Length: 292
Ligand SMILES: [Fe+2]
Ligand SMILES: [Fe+2]
Image (cartoon, rainbow, N blue to C red; front, side, top):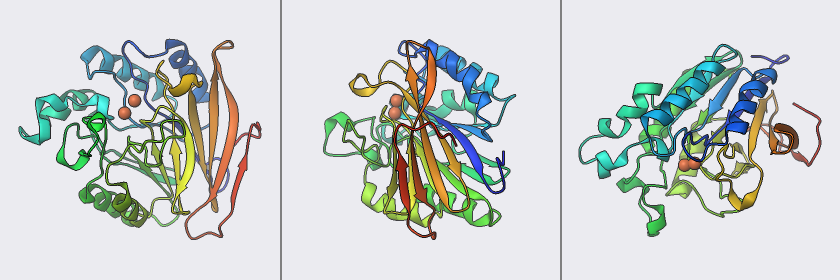
């Protein structure tokens, strides 16, 4: 939806983790609250399930289904959504890993055009895969990566899109280190950064870290990291989702913080970043409720 003039507004949520850890009070609140924000689309940046089980995917599918009458929904898979053990290192082909997810959400790399913006999903979740390996054993099946074929494909989608559209890139693994975890979701992030910048994206939407974030890659690509709506937020911090506004000159990322006592989300910090090619201004407004 074009909010006014050339503005585009997106609700960005992540890591719902349907299953034992999902916070149903938050899920119910999201269902009521998101349609009131006037966003042109909702983006869910992966980890819809906890163990890629049918029941978890069915609950996630029902959530998406209830959201769709209000606005389009773009979904990408997270590391929890793939059955990597059915084809470790892709030895038995990729189809087995993604079959269950695809049964419910079809496209692994969805593209969505809405008034004012084009959104492109990229696949960063491969499970135990050569491209995601690091020297840290904890990273096994958790870390993600973005092969050049993915950044090339997204770059092509953006190049073919109408010039006036905002370019929105979506994948699961956090591209900036988490504020609490200090961890990066992507393996080989230095080389990935160069390719991400070359896609021409205005903003990247990701999750995985279970902590909210707003920042930039190399001072030009804005990054919205959404938290989790499960009971697995880091450091006991309240859950957060983001509302992302892209206007002609800047990307604005506003956090909405969960207030358990009131069972509601409250407007919280806003961060604004100049779009690539625009004069460099970065303004953050902490704790305000100016709205987007
Ligand atoms: Fe997650
Ligand atoms: Fe994840």
